[in-house]
Image (cartoon, rainbow, N blue to C red):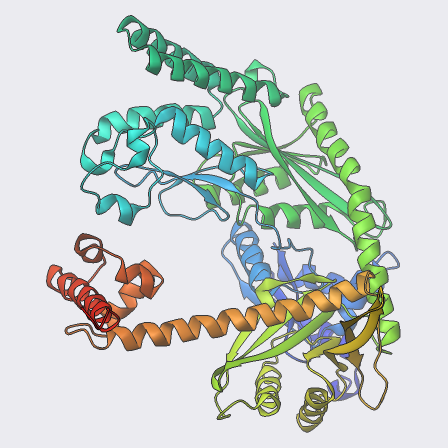
Length: 640
């Protein structure tokens, strides 16, 4: 056998794959820096991974690029193919591999959450679906519409809108009760059974059982009218009219056969510029929302790309964080086996029976066609945005003489207050957009006093010890030539001078307007080894990306610094109160968030905090109130 050292990397990988098991599992492809660049699933690991190293002519350019960057491959065995699906989605979410199709988290779609596990549930806007005993409805397209719906339901069905801590501390009803929009469960004016009867009306509305809601409200209206409670009857009448208007605005897409079924329908549209996948959310026959996801590097018409590969991966990831409906209708007839496999995966996630099928019937085809129409109508807008960002990033590459396209740009900022609590922020833009999952915060550990240069050196040194982070194609430093020089020296010391870096600083210039002397600011970009700064037209997309990146880094650093300052102030104030240890102080901070809210809290509100006794609550209340009284005496009129 030929010596393994003389084989190419591709040949070495082919040899290793020969020892892979023929079992179900997940494979992780990694580059030289141990970064996971691709995650895949397989019923037969050996056969699936071996297919990447064939000499077939129909391999896509993306796959060729992936294979060229693989240094080694790990795998995790699973008992079943269903487990492999579940594990793949969680690993993609964790590692965010470069070559996987993956959902971006820059826009979390809103849900209406009902805290059903509570004695007196309330309605919330939720951005993530959690296993917390709550009921979730959605996803909806508009956060504003969700908030307005919650206000309408609270008003119509007298659902409480107060926070749990506020409710527990009440001794008498609040203003919401006084104006007739709540039945005051906080002071036992309504019991759980009566409250949940009202809540049932809101749940029926959210489940689109609107005829039932209207019938029940009409019965209530006539009962109030018969009892000569005409004002109450008029309010119910107005609620009925509001519901009817909402129903008129919703699109009805299903016949009576599917009025009790929740459905998600997928469709897609694209060309060589990318693909947009559209999901329609149909609840009890009515469209409540839709969601668009654009992928620039997928050509749906390419013979080298199998639509089943990327669409199945998309759907698998999609239901990692979204409510799973009764039925999922797909636009490709990929066979009964794959439908059943996806259904088993969704059943494992939801604990309910889920049906996955191709929209082959007349009704199914009409729904898939509607999803495709939506995808086509949103496609050009997404392509336009993508092309605009791509053009801006190419201009950045050209102006800064970057060797590679700046897919990932990192920006760093230092923040301190009078030399204390120095912190730094790391903000990441990918494809010209914020990727908040990649943001990082640093407490400065080795620098005393306000030394931004030394702090920047520490942060960059710590950041590039993390080999698991993807390398940026550009680093932006918030600062001028001095900070830039430090960054260049640090990157050279740690052997990463291959990463381009620029400094961004404001410059003040004098000008005239209507014979008046005015001072203007200009953003300037400094490159290593170049005396004159680079500038961009202020209205250009390239300029907006870079300045937004710097502003976001500044905001993130200031926010972190402020939180540390608040915690320090918080702890120092509470240190003087007898009986408060670290655990109780932490519980108070977690519950009230700010020192001001603790100062204004009553004894009853303080006593609701976990681990804080009635005696502790009294001590805290007495400390802040006696403290305020002493301040008033010190600041009083000395002539009194």
